[in-house]
Amino acid sequence: MLEISDNPATSANDDPITSDQRQFSAKVNAWMPHEIMLTDAWFPLAHSFAVDKKPVRRAVYSQPFYLWRGSDGQVIAAENHPNDALAGAKSEYTDDSGHYPVLEKYGYVWSWLGKPENAAPEHVPSIPYLPEDGGLPLHMLGTVRFDCCAPLSLENLIDLTHADFIHADVVGDEKMDSETVEVFHDSETITMVRTCVNKSVAPIMKIFGGVRADVQQVRQVIRIYLRSHAAIAYGRFSPGDNVQLFHPCVPETRDRTRLDYAMNTSNVKKTNLFRYMMPKASYKVSRQDSSMTSPQSPRYMRPEKRKDLHSPLDEAGQKYRVLMMALAERQARGDFAYRDNVSLDCSDIIGYDGT
Image 1 (tube, helix red, strand yellow):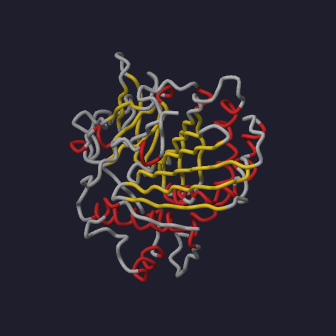
Image 2 (cartoon, rainbow, N blue to C red; image 1 turned 30 degrees about the vertical axis):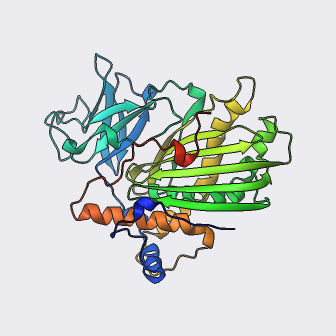
Image 3 (cartoon, rainbow, N blue to C red; image 1 turned 90 degrees about the vertical axis):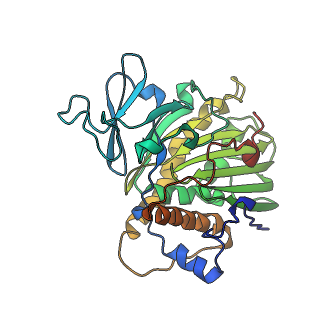
């Protein structure tokens, strides 16, 4: 059974998803993901441990960011390398010293791309299961890349059902008694909740997690923060352990995405191999995802007529497309305001109870 519902907070007259089905479908099929560029947003550019006194280079939409720590240990983010002749030059995205707004939270260095005067800590997305001061062990952190634009990677992720087919050898197949899908959105986020009854046990939990049952009760959540191109994934498995993944898709270029992930398995017993193996599964899963999204990315760059095909389970992905395009159109009109609070604790929405 498929149930689609919308967050009551989206009742504004300009909600792009309230149009009739024909208009909605037209918007969905006008999707050009590589043309999306959203600013006035915090991007998680690096794990905190990766930034030291020696500058490291990152990019957002090909805009360069150099990150390093000053003598006081505080992170500095600049458009130019400190030894460059242009160091200290101001641009549209930096202050009078040529620096971007920057902060550290959840074990990441976040830098702001947009008007510096609009940078505010309250626009950092809520990630309730990551410690605000960071400090997760290195085996829970990693970096992968996708040869596609970030919106395509996130569109793939927001459809939780894809995992049954692409990642069946890791998270289990499509066999279950029933499932319910719910979709919630506001102007800055979209969330998909999938509840499965008597689903096949994830192989990685059977092999490394000690689960002996044949089926699990599963509740999976994906929540995407549109501007930051960042997603949080939270899964509750019974029997089994919870999965707590931060999945930021930083748009380095229009066809290259960097993912500095964090999977917090601190809730799993130290004697349980799942604690150590599940974070490393990201390397296998990312290759599987990339095999699907990489060939798609260049197709959207061709100026040709096409019609994307969708199933009823694609509702979340379709709404994601429309919300991203609506936000891009609003920014093109000069409106960069946040209409909804992305830093508001989302524990209730994702079903996180501290475990």
